[in-house]
Length: 393
Ligand code: NI
Image (tube, rainbow, N blue to C red; front, side, top):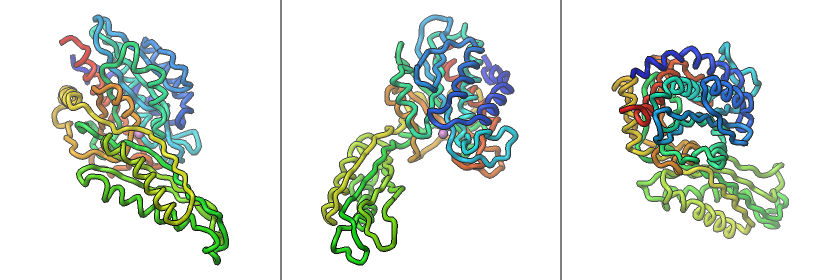
């Protein structure tokens, strides 16, 4: 069966859906209109909705008619970013201060097209395909609620896959890294506190700002001296807040930051190392301290056999020249990692959205837009992956 041609029949619909979703962006956990829109389109395709009671987020279930078989989950994210769109597109955001600047409109339209295309051939499939549209990927907060709502259960998911548009790849090109592909992300807030006092009489208090300055330097020692040089880690202090005037030593200095790693062993030691630095610096400079450490997501780890399946599918629907072998992971994060932790046969791949010969505009930029030309290739790869797992062989 030529699935590219089959999916081609949904090109116009996917394009309209994407433009519609793009014009009505909603930030994480506010995707009420998008949820409704997705639910309506899935119903129109004859796909059953499983009630999640999560406010936003949708799970569509398609049972193959050829009998029992594996459960394949395909996931898209639906949330937009809190920023003002400056694309000037006819379908630009009608919601001031909110825009689809990461292409989640494209992911959602791609998965809707996939759902329609697979529903049309369900008599040739066995098992079950679940279409998971999750909220709040940008804050790494949406996947957990979906998992708790049981999207991977009853019966348990055997395979899970998702895609993300990449401005670094030409239209139709596809890549996925074997093993750790994206970093874990955890966040921290560290507060140093002292009595506070006059800037001219520092001996009458202790100084939270001086302490914070040493802390910012000290945490860099974790990566450079305590993590094996062959492992990867990032500790970034990204916000520092302290003080109100040129002559007052404040009572508090507050720092917020993020920690990224590519494996569990390294990730597991980072909280202790951070706490040791805070305690040590606080003791040295005589301040009290508090550390609030919030674990967010593990690394995204791609199953090597799933990457083989991906490349076989890509070769089939897009041709061998569309495969780009990636060799390096990235230190960005994705809450897809939480699914891949539960479903080891998991795959997170990138699909090109760059018009060849043009300058890339990367995600989270006010002039970013997903490329409509990536919709059919994305849905065709999804369909072929499902066909290879659930189709007649
Ligand atoms: Ni994104």
